Image (tube, rainbow, N blue to C red):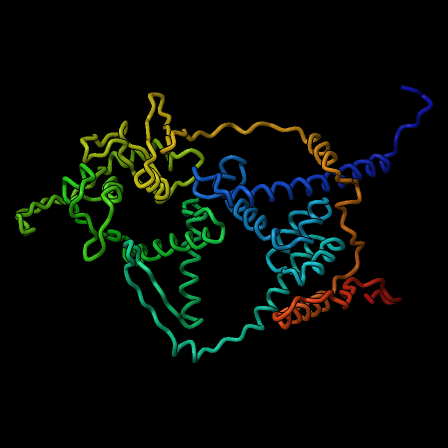
Amino acid sequence: MDGNIAPLSSYEVNRALEAQITELAGHLNAATYRFLSLIAEYDRGGGWSGSQSCAHWLNWKCGINLGAAREQVRTAHALEQLPLISAAMARGEISYSKVRAITRAACTATEEYFLMIARHGTAQHTEKLVKYYRRETEREELSREQQQHANRALTYWYDYDGSLVVKGRLPASVGAMLVKAIETAQEQLDREHVSAETPDHRSTFAARRADAVAIVAQSFLSGEGGAGAEIVVHVDERTLRERSSGRCSLEEGPALAAETARRLACDGSVIVLIEDEHQQPLSVGRKTRAIPPAIKRALKARDAGCRFPGCPNKRYVDGHHIRHWADGGETKLSNLVTLCRFHHRRVHEGSVQVVLLDDGAVRFTQPNGECLEAPAPSPSDWTRLVAQNEELGLMIDSHTAATRWTGERMDYSTAIKWLLGRRRHVSAETSRALPPSRDCPPRVYAAKCDDEGAWQ
């Protein structure tokens, strides 16, 4: 080392590190935007069809927590409606934390203002403004309790395909109790990663709610220490064994597919009922479990949850007979595998083939012949991120993603007033295109302190 070169001071070292950190933050912001864009496209295309949802696929393939993955899918779709926010994130200017918060409240009329806050404020500023703004918009929605009570109604019927259709209108207070019960059940499902989702993110949430309703109903019917809900299916032995035409229906309900009855019989209780030609009972056997409790405990200890590749579900699972007992398959560990309700349905109704290999591994083959496996994630070099962004023409430096806030007080009241005014203005312009806004967003950061230390 040249002795004439003075070593860097600790201040200079820290400033150099600070510049590297803030520059890399900008590259990460731009890369995260591309990541979200790919997620939105992948979700629309349904490329994750082997999993329960795009979020479950991210949890499996990318090692992302399921709750965080769902939020990324939501944010990815919301960004498609916010071009200014999208462009700023694509340039590396604002972080995912800020974008995630903004997409909960912004629209085309207010995204410019939210973008200004995101550029100049911290993530906490952005999140608090979104929270306060959503609170104020909710207060503008007036309820009519008496009218709600007078119009309350609940109807249900079986549709042509056998699905139960429910339609209702409840007062806000009653509805709040129902929603709370559903949300509580849904949270329980989410914690255990068992909600069955559908290709479109918007309908995904609806499907998860439907799963939660099933848990609410099951909880009420079983109660503390109860025997659980009992759903009776009448199916002819030949229909169950050969999947041929014959009686197969819910008791006092619509017909079921024979394969659905086989799925329910995989891990249910069975009562043999012998009838004459007029369907009059001649003898009734005792109720037995398809999988005895001892084998059920051993199966739970061995599999510890759903064995479908990448599925983290551990509760609300069924024991699946690889070779169905109606076909002569034995009820033993070597012929059983644990599946969650979603994947159990896919195996039966979706014609997914299951094979338990000699080493204990389980292979799932889809109807197109594709085998589902979970490869180990490969490490990546972060320096490639910078090169990729430069190839895209992104000029990101230490100032791109750095927050412009210098310590001023955030005036949330002024910000919310402007946002609400802008929102009302847009609502009034439904009959024609919104002209360019001439009103400049107000400055919401105090410039300095007076002599006594109060913010001006």
